[in-house]
Image (tube, rainbow, N blue to C red):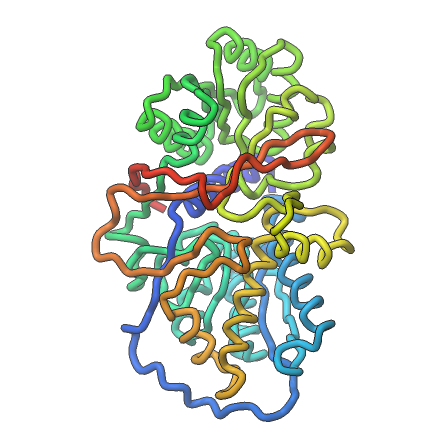
Length: 431
């Protein structure tokens, strides 16, 4: 696939990730037919089988989507080392869908119909074409990443950030999803930012993402500077010079990783210093030094926002973070997506443990997921809720996790995510 196509995919993924995180919550599903468990309870010590679908070789690039998978596998490895669930080992069946709808349907068929997994965990699919099939089979899909609209569309799918939508087979409310402006509110309130730039390519997906970010910034009262560069011959130095001239406080972008690195280098070259170069949870990784090796000033202005506790946060009392760090020592890099995959695996484990007496079945696990109680994965996640609202909320109080990169310390948490909360408007968009 050409770089132009990869950028289109990356911009679309960035859009959906940003809003999937911002939308925050997901729903119960007690209204969907007969939920009786016809599967007999298991009495043997055979493994409990789960599936993990990942677009590991997607057109976006190698390792772009593997963080949740790696985090989930690390959790299950640690769990099995401690004896598993009531003496039963968790057997993880993985499937790479290649980032295509055809491949995704093949993975769903293999895991759901042939391997008969109890649940899917930490799904991270560029094109979740098999979502309806998973829902029809009533297989709980736990802690998946909302790269598309599936987790706001179908019952039995429980995304990592929750949902408020009806999930009646149509996306959101009448085909529209909603996201908040808490990220922009945070930087305005906490960092006194007033002028923000949005950088995009002259390419449709990139430009659409930029328009959405611009809309949110304007809703929060920012002066917005829009910068668009030619994809084939981007002049990032001219953009950087204009950012400096305009006195920009924040920089948001709708460009790929390569473009971001070049933009940061150009900003360093012209002396454009900003309060924050803002990125999302997908880029909250330990590879910042390598990715931005030619831009030390810009690199140290990188901020990331999300809905999970910073993997670099080793403060006293954060036992769940220490457990994650201990369990992922064998991984070459760390990332926030790994934390969320770890949390998804923990979520399944808590659900399965609730079923030990009656049998760890799809229906029992689904009942736990549909129970209506907020879930935090021992404090790794902001409370995840599943509700079914007939109308979308106009405003919502939403919390967020914020960290800043520092070369000598890594990602440094900015306050506590459970108290960094903002009552913000919810803006509609079409997936």
